[in-house]
Length: 104
Ligand SMILES: [Zn+2]
Image (cartoon, rainbow, N blue to C red):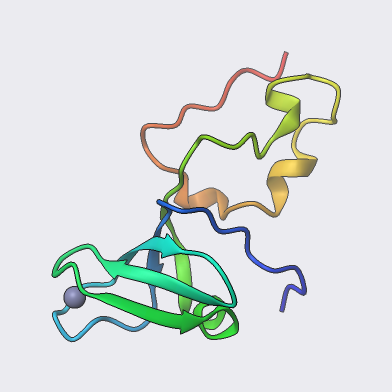
């Protein structure tokens, strides 16, 4: 199990292992803190989950907000490519709208 806390941002949409009573699995992050506030994207109801519990239930990221530069190499080009991205998100779950820039 990874020791590092998952980096969450407001607006991130998460796929959880357990569904909401309405049958939906996707939740948007609406509050950050010791407890993470999530909004069900189908019925708009809000829930609070302890971060540790959320990390255990998290299956994958559905989409992430792009306002914070998570990968410095993409902007400065000084960091080794690949290293920073390795732990950020599962490679098989890359959003379709996001095309990685050429490394060169
Ligand atoms: Zn719901």
